[in-house]
Length: 139
Image (cartoon, rainbow, N blue to C red; front, side, top):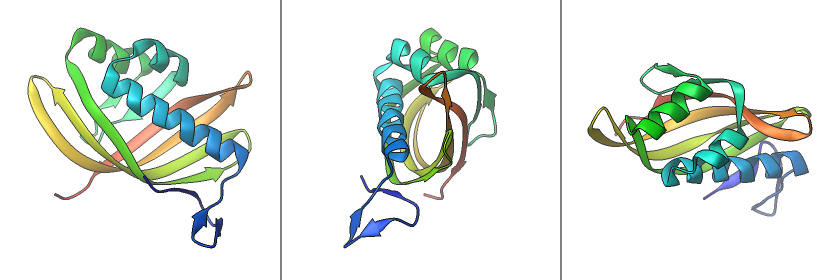
């Protein structure tokens, strides 16, 4: 998985600010939690006011996203990020990248790749995901 902070490289190696690295680590935890159906981790990492825009243009809130996972209406098998770039804005960090997603939604299994933008904000000292927007990539 290639991860880098926008504009910061050193001899081919990726150099990251503390906020950017911390948020990228949290986002990998969130993606892993989706594939493992780890609702407790998702509740901790996702803000109550989340706006989650799927590649299908469907919009979820924290409650509807986690609720669909708990009910089995949406079952993520894996979410694998790549080419992630972080833009540290101080109290928020914007991530962009690609994710390979395997999911069953409405009983239909699908695997596809998306380009995403993911925003984390620091709330009471903790980082939480506040927004996700993705666009499906051609096969």
